[in-house]
Image (cartoon, rainbow, N blue to C red; front, top):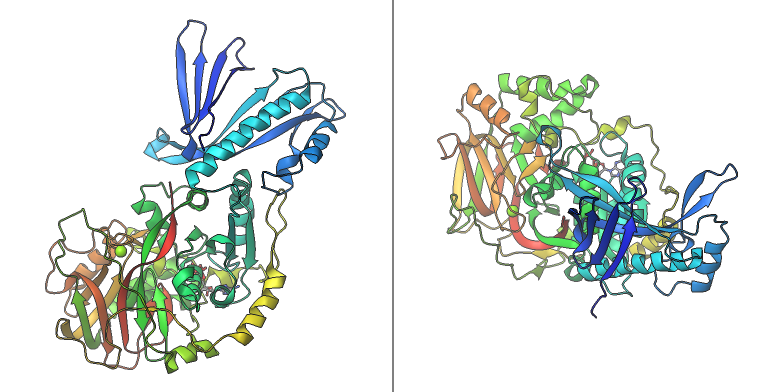
Length: 606
Ligand code: ADP
Ligand code: MG
């Protein structure tokens, strides 16, 4: 259907006599201002930057002051075009208007490149159009609504929505993530933008660790156009694992996943912004919220982790040795606040530990480190997990390794060393200091157009859990199982290691640029191996270079190397040590990781 372009002439109220020709079409709004000298100035508000619009009624209060009210039709949460027209009109005329004008407010978030100190960021811009060509308020309102409907239609068209689409998103919020402010951040910063966009959502607040994983594993997802984590990477990790452990994971994996970074580890949100060229700081929440509304998604690689007793799906990293040790062990110094991380790093540098073991990997063939135009990974013919074997059954029975990582404090930088250490190294658990309870209630937010389904779904989850088949599934690749020998095509390195840390996103935290060349769907795991024998100053340089992505030498050397691989196996010879997946501590023991290219989809900025 061809959408009709609208044009009209408006007069600005501030500068008398200024005329503005306004055009609305598939590109957005074009405002042509004509000044007295006959010269005209054009401003374009790109449709991509517009999140939504509202018809506004100006109501006079008793003292004669103007107040803005949104028109009834958009506050009742009914986004359907077949809204009750009679009710709408009668609601509108209940206001007493001395002024017959109706207003249209258009909400846009425009990239501002001229900002101080060259910081590029999006700024909220509200375009206000006053309709007063007609004598009666009703007619002016009708005209404003015609523009409103046209904005909606162009937006819907550009996002590929049909009028009948239910575009509800499912939001899981971890009240304990980061410094425990996720609820507040959601209500204050995310909800207003979702409301401007008339994006409906269901909010569920997690009650405990692994709540989100179980919730997503059994939830009926048919009506959702996306699933969003409001929290840190740990919450996203739970959602990802819940999704891929569903019996219908093959379909469910197509639901775009999003994240609003409220955690202490925000590697994913930072990486999404980075690869898509969107500003992250100083407004990561706004950027991430706009991403939820973009209607765009991109395939994301997932790494399948096999251990003796469990299968996990990872989107960020796997670590053994130095970085994981600092990340997890420094939690005991959490009372020192931001300093703990630096102190623990120095401590670990002085009493450097090495680990004996074997690291085997399958190098990514025909990979050219120099080439920056990397092709997308070939999609792997995905298979269900080979069998519903003991380890998968164990998962079902609740043996999913729970994350131990719960204590924490924030670290912050006083010396440059700290800068170099990424947020993924912070404990994920500022949460424990949070005074907020973890009730699974939801906030009622003024103008909110969601309704929570927390209670029903609890019942639903319980019901479904009890009916759950023991045949748990999930995608698998072609690597051998952990108890089989590695194939001859794999490279095997044996010896003493300071660290083995593999990553598949650019950032492990908002300040850790770990793999500058990583892409979301390149099918590559970058494994960084540091061997014993490295000098402390070399190690210090490595750690300090992590914030700028300069930690890995351009050419691999005797002690430090980064290898692009598609699978690897870590076999520690000792019984003790720390292993992390996506920053969360997992059971220590042999581990195999295999790349599954583009298995899920993440929401991407426009
Ligand atoms: P952060 O980035 O601060 O670590 P995350 O959202 O990543 O925040 O979550 C940290 C950990 O908290 C994860 O291991 C997650 O499983 C766990 N978790 C999730 N919900 C809750 C809750 N309601 N109470 C306690 N822990 C939770
Ligand atoms: Mg990648």
